Amino acid sequence: MFFLRSSYLCLFLCLMMITGYSNAQSDSTKTKKKLSFKDPEDGALDLSQFLLEANGVLPVIIPITEPAVGYGGGAAILYFHKRKKQYSTYVPPNVSGVMGLYTQNKTWGAGAFHSHIFGENRVRTITALFKPDVRIKYYGNGSEFLSKNPIGINLDSWVIFQKAELRLGKSKFYAGASYTYFKTDVSFDTIPGRPILNEIIKRLNINSTVSSIKPHLTYDSRNNAFTPTKGIKGEVAANFSAEWLGSSDSFSTMHTNFYGYLPISSRFNSAWRFEGSYLLGDAPFYAYPFLDLRGIPAMRYQGDNVMLTETEWTYNVYKRWSLIGFVGGGKAFSEFSDFAESDWAYTFGTGFRYKIARLLGVNMGADFAWGNGEDFAFYIVFGSAWF
Image (cartoon, rainbow, N blue to C red):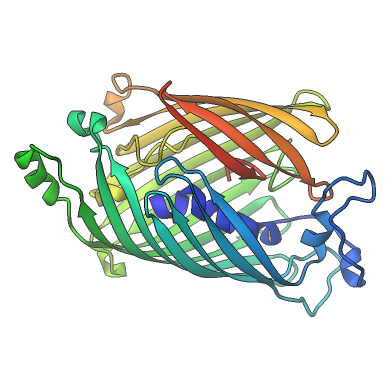
């Protein structure tokens, strides 16, 4: 679904995930010391100490560069709860927060969340309430006319999200599930001089509710959860939306994701991504799978099935600074028998990274992407562009 995958919500949750998924070790959490934003090793700007030891209130500015909604920005206030019990390994603090955002096409949103760690980083949960009012273009999901003449739609919605995940013993497997409640009021712009098409579009103007459960099984051997350079992550998930859960329609979506990281040398790294989403049943038009690639607006290419691949290469040019290049492509199609005839969507681009937290191995930077030779977008990236 667009709202839980869109870049502005990912940027917002990314700051929360910093505290929820770090495997870093730290003895410094046991003693009080003055926080510093400089690394004592090289004197460079570094957030390692803050991310490892912070508690209290942190205001955050969130840039938005998703081409589907236009440029904009948001702000969040995060509260780091002080952990009362100390463990032999580093356990992140629990985090609560509120946020708001606004973009140039009048998309706006506001929400609150809480991230909680139980025990010694064995069980992790996320609870969120979000109010998005999104304005986006609709390309017709295979319509020849709308693919070239997209119309504006407004999705005035409410979202409730709950996720829990458990590590299986001492293995690298994780099992969990998430629940999403999504209620929306839908409205479409009209197309001048197209009364028949406008009448057809009105049939899509149906307010709906999606209530779904998404169990997942994940294998994760990456050496870092944010900016990995070695290892793999694979996930199989199934999203079930059913009337007995309170949904307007019954449908399901299967997801298969694979991410691989292969170092070429001490300065040169490669990364590989393969994703697939497969719809079963009749879903609302906004819940169809779509290609999620840098340089291509969200919901630009939709279909019952979506498959994509992407590779990214990183070269460390000087101290903390690195350059990256990436290329990818994918297809959105109705049936697997239509795959060969479906059009390819492709993207390529470049960017840079700065190691913003050395002890956690976290990079931050920007990407510049071109999609299908006609769309351009840039993105602010914390950690990885894929998460």
